Length: 226
Ligand code: NI
Ligand code: MN
Image (tube, rainbow, N blue to C red; front, side, top):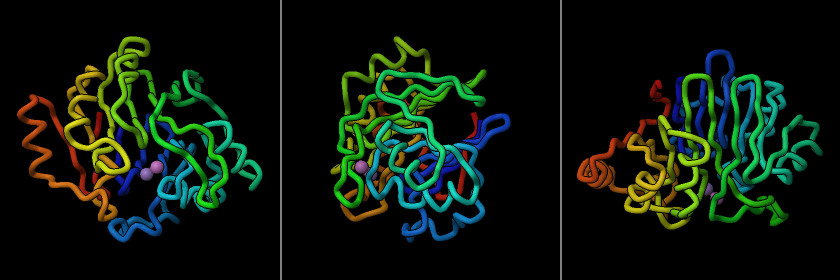
């Protein structure tokens, strides 16, 4: 499994034979100007919640690639009304797709569309393929529910956590989340894009190292392989 960081909370995940795009917000992210949304592949687009910084490029990419959307019921209905195919889920549910199983997990956040309309409840995803199990938290506070993930779903190979603070948890809470998740390998996201969420990378690495946890903060366009 190859996980590429596309800036902010946007990721591309290549499984054995499918490409999943997560929360594409690229065309208005100056930090991600070397990523060309017209060249991104996608068989599926997973959306954690309806905020603009998570859905901006969904429509353009889905219409070009024919990708199917996986998200909560309200977000899928929103995009189905635009002629885009989707698979609706809700918290606590799982579904077996052709690339693996997706679990839609809780997040403590909000989820309105840019026009203020209701975007369902925000969530995150656990993606299980035959070889790997990956948690993508979405925008969320630290929550005790994270303890349920390794208990109920299974041991994680990697957890992707927001780290920019202000709108989500910050570095210290992400370290606690790593403990709750029983996963010491963490990829940070949702940081540096806006002034409110700028973080000190050196401090983040030091704090994770002191907690004996492994932190990855990828340059935009770079990837890690599981
Ligand atoms: Ni948000
Ligand atoms: Mn966000």
